[in-house]
Length: 425
Ligand code: GLU
Figure 1 (cartoon, rainbow, N blue to C red):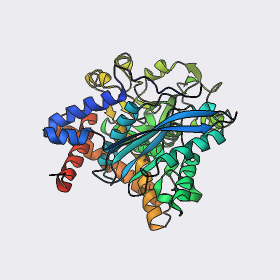
Figure 2 (tube, rainbow, N blue to C red):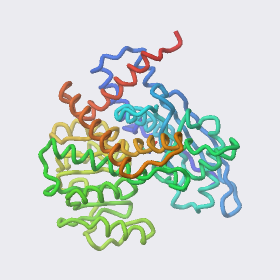
Figure 3 (tube, protein in one colour):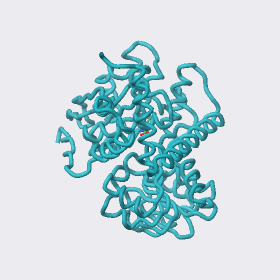
């Protein structure tokens, strides 16, 4: 097959609908005008490109790539690039809007954007990935830029892909421009702490949530769904803070040990096992559904969208959900979770540590200087904690769950900024 058909857009509950239903609820509480509603709703720019790439077998395969800039009201577009066979325009639009709200919640000067390529990185060689990333970069030459739109890693991409993007963009422009992308390797102007930043923010959010629920980390248990960059670092950092991690999972299945799993060992195992936990012996193999329903205090969905739905939300026993992934809870599950009295620290707050350190990386690139890890961690922790407190206070003020409160904080910030900038009058 020379072409990966974009995944069909599901009728029921795609991420865009999940995002929009929360957006609509927050807009109603804030009493935003109809004009402002459409200003905030309609993406500023949506680009779809066809990318012909020569594969290792000498044949050309055409991939479809996307970049959506949802908003530039607070600053240049910002957001990752996802390599996944199921990527489609609707998903990228939802993820781009989430970036707008995320940057607004943590008060960093960026709008929101997201990119994606429908491809399967697990079936591609490094050379094929490199040619695909370089082709995508050239297609987006007029879109990307340190003051226009700044990509970063997301599912299926990491520092290696960001290095190719930075190199291709720099060559095309005839000069080194490292501020065009974040999440780069350290030698190319990447930032200390960027790799573990999202996991770190998840840990800070979890501790803040546990504090509100009077859960002592040394007596608390947790399950983490997803063992990629976000889940594995979140699990490791939570364990360092005393939390017992009873369950972890990845595409190979879920693993449970009531006495706790040694996360260092699990990471080491994954690293020498071709990147998966398959065959991990320190815990019992259970299903992903069982993992979500474990009798633990804290549940961290850190895999992908729509894993908690109205079908399984009723089985959740955790008291606190910290959303490491973007959009792991579908809108239909919100009501069930709220009725059960579970506290949710939503994605646009809980996983904002990544884009926060991306911002620090971009600042360092612009001033041509390197900060210490200590400075980065201290600043990230402060931003995450301050943002948590602001969202918590908003949830008390409006008597709404944390998710809606986070949308209220974000939408209010973007709408009031727009009023100062003004439109075409
Ligand atoms: N992909 C990450 C996210 O969803 C990071 C984005 C960035 O650093 O720009 O937040």
